[in-house]
Length: 309
Image (cartoon, rainbow, N blue to C red; front, top):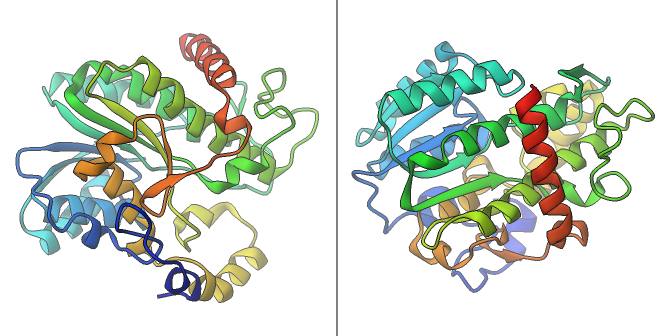
């Protein structure tokens, strides 16, 4: 356990920074439930899949390729032994791949008790543009927007959508979302680009929570600072530095997966529709993260973009 997680006491939920995904789901039987999970093949996604399967769930395991998803599912099921996993290819930076995944899941007849939108990329050193959008906005937000909205009709009456955001949403561009420059042509800052994509994740959950029928919920989650494959696009020196300080001041992967697992399956999380969660408790987002107007505008822009991608 890191110094930070040891210092902070549990919050009102009874859990906190030091809680693990196994601990927050210890009393939950997921037999008969189906949970969709993106980014299943590494980091907190892999740990979340392991714990969901351990509790008896069927996990729809999404990764960039079906091979990666299959390998991850096989490794998890050999440990968990209770649930099952169904692998799907879903390259979030490719809208065609996302739509093919939506069709495959729908055609297979799955009904979803939860969608955990966990996958993402972080702070590539050089600006990359695909489909006219900066790659982090396309991958982290638009890919998940197309996936989740395409599967809303498969969500059960008490289904949950858990969108993994980050405290990094506080460091977005001026105004929160740069609607007039989503390719970031005028100025590219990798951390602002990451922050913008994570703010978009938070705002997506906020607006979705307003649109869902009673009984269904959507929440955004900050998992914490964790050394995972998410940082694969960072520079070598930054990765090395994080490798040194991360174990001291960050969370373990088991702790990092806790908030999204809690949000997806714990009975108490059902009371927090539209919330921003951290350490398995309600947290306060940034000013932009609290803006209903910004959330509604992002939804409208995202719908228009999705139709053109």
